[in-house]
Image 1 (tube, rainbow, N blue to C red):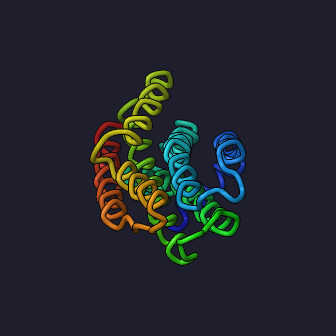
Image 2: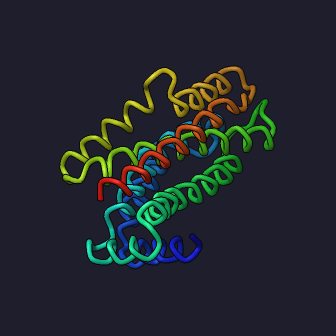
Image 3: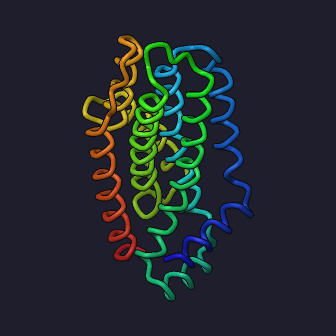
Length: 216
């Protein structure tokens, strides 16, 4: 699996297709977050932006291989393992960026009434919930379920929006906890939302890998 992850990461870095979601997320933070604003609200805004970014990055990794190269890798390592490596690679970049954003926003935000450790913990858990939910959206809107680019992109946008606003979504629950905490200046750690996101992402990855092995 380590070799597959290195291979997928190398493809992603060389393609430079990661620049578009990265720059869009940076622009979102530059426009929507200001130094000195309540830290929990800023962390919630940053975590929400990671959901569509993760879905986008996952889709990039699922479609970046030429068909011939994908067939060779599948023959060598198995289609399921190759697909899982693509999913993990697409999730890693937004997760790393989310950690950096949490640390930066905690440093510059208004932590009045909220300790730095509590703010960082709440931000990291919300980030994890949004990243994992976004990974699930990306897995369900890419290969092997949707191969046509137009339908795939449309489903990705709609799925990301629904994941942010639908009651019961792990991302929505985590963001609600941060918003509630920003109003009461008490950091609520969204452990349940994060656990739900882990289960959702795990189940979705298993479904996608099994479907890939059967349909491709």
